[in-house]
Length: 150
Image (cartoon, rainbow, N blue to C red; front, side):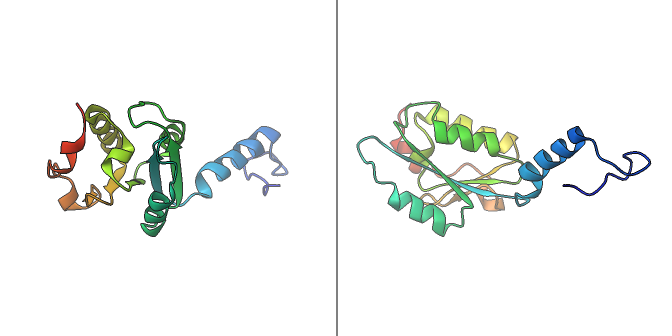
């Protein structure tokens, strides 16, 4: 039970609706840190072992790790969609390698651009990309992008 709402009438009694709304707000915002580091991994259907990516993301300090077992060609993947729904400004998305976030290249560029529009930082551990640092803002070397299909 929440403490009485000061403006809730003569006796400071809360309404059931106000109490429910307060509990929802607490569970969604107060219990989550101001910034969260989300890890995202993807394993193809041919290589079902996610341990390497999971261990690297955990070592990078990810608070939550989402993993899809699907082709990188798919635009909508359940774990990625769940991660995207939870993002807030100042959060960070970390991937083990760029191609884990998506292929083709257009999808990867659009996803990272969406992070920037939303105020979310992006890190790729293998390619040493970190948009939360001043040096991570410019376009990275095109070498890592050469593997992607257009």
